[in-house]
Image 1 (tube, rainbow, N blue to C red):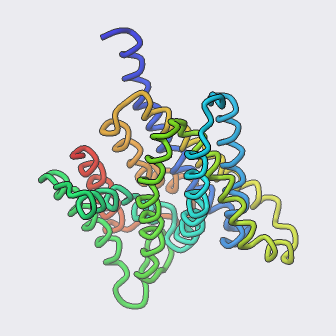
Image 2: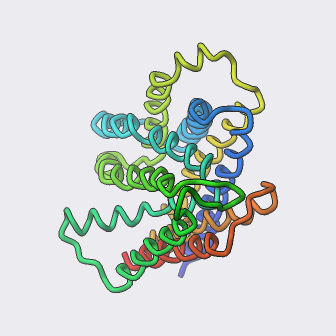
Length: 300
């Protein structure tokens, strides 16, 4: 193996773990931002922060001489729903569930990707994938067990079972837009451009949805704005690191490492968020669901 290949194989997992850390850190920073900025307003700043990272990185690393209008149109169409819809759902889930539980429940995107391949592409699931799918479902069920009755308590908060639908819906959106993104990347293989254009369109959508309401409400608390700008920058950096890792390593190496971000969120929450303490069943649900995602991805 050449020295370059060895360097690439060793750098890919570090980049993937860096992406996982940034995704987890974004969940923690969201909790700080929600103390002074309402959840409905937060995507204005988180998407704006990610927009800065995406366009800054694309300006440095992208060769714009290969611009393809067809690919840009696909990226723009996806941007009308992603990441704006996911941002809205994710911040509400984080507000209700806390970073650890919302991260674990929202990390089931591969489930929808695999099920879509089985239902629409005629692919078959191997024993490992079926076991992984069962573990993911079982982990979410364990999280929901705390919610029998009027509500549940995890991470020092009460929430009804239906709230788990918020991060699951976000994961569904992430899974369903992947075929469109792959189609655009087949025309012009520039993932950073896909992210930059997507964030630009999502910024326009969120402005159209809540811009007037935000204007009437007056200026947001500066501290909250800074926190959510940080959230966006963390998510944008995580996306960049993920793309870089996938460029150096295989998805079977990178994706399972990125899937560890809910467990990293548990550790960060323990040190930085007072009251974010999971019960044993909740922690077990997170571990089982993350292990299921890893097994599902390894079986692809």
